[in-house]
Amino acid sequence: MASGTTVSAATPPAWIAEPMSLSSEERVPFDDRTGKVMYLDEVMERVESITRELPGDYPTFTVKEDLIRMCLRGWGKPMLDYFESVHDLMNQRVKILADIHFGKHTHSRLHARVLAIIREQLRLLHETTLRRLKRLLSVEGLPFTLNHMYLKDYKDKFLAHYRDIRRQKAKIRLFAAFKTHRGLLTCTPNDLHRLLPDDDLEPALDVIASVRAYFQAVFKRFIDLVPLEVDSEFVRGFDRTIPNALFVGLDIKSPERCASWLQDSPEGVGRRKELLATKQRLEAARGELSSFALT
Image (cartoon, rainbow, N blue to C red; front, side):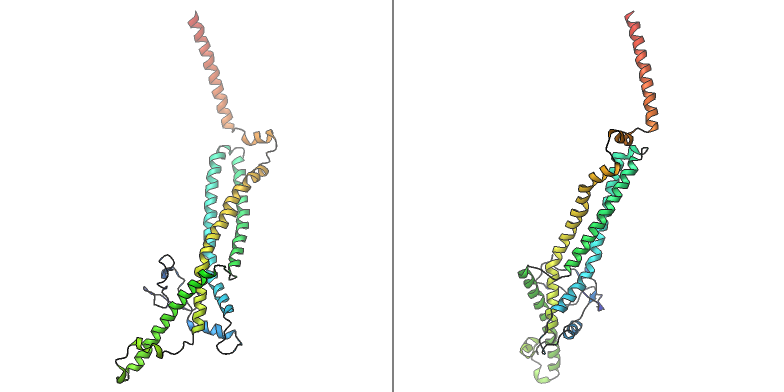
């Protein structure tokens, strides 16, 4: 999620594992994460560094906002990679279509002109769509959702998960301390629940749970909006703009101009003359044969 110690393990530790309350579709596989971990004390330092309030009063929204923006920094590359893959695919497909429909008009340079118009139109649409995608990513950097119930539900799940991990560790440490005293050997970690001190890092747990819940609530929105933007502005945008671009670029305002683009190649003209001459000879021969048959 942020800069910190890198974790590499075949099986993720409990404090990295996703809550079991999430469905299998909602859990992020450990191997799919960045591998960068921010620890509770680092988060707590951020919380304490921004406040002038009384002890225990922490205005944590600024910290949450900063951490959310740090998470979003990793969204730009896959977004651009996806767009570039669509751009490359469009380039390939439209060239194939141009070759099919205009490939036989290379002599009049119609084929080359159509390809040039197509490439220019794709370039313009690429620039427009790229600006919109960057704007979309920038807007996502402003934490916002009206799905408050969804957000709260996820925050409760993550906060309960993180608190449980902290309590289990505290119980184990407390039990180990008491175990050195022979009179308390029958005591179990569960018996020590009431003896557990308040968690000084609770504000950091709240921050982490809020940020993780926000990510869970909005990432589906983002992965829907990016393909929608690419499809609307780039793919369908090409379909909307290419007819006029071809009309203007080919300057087809008169029958003569159209005829110049569609004129046959010299080889085709020569071949047609040969075939017409052959046709005339065959028709003449047929006429002579017909006259013999009548006599």
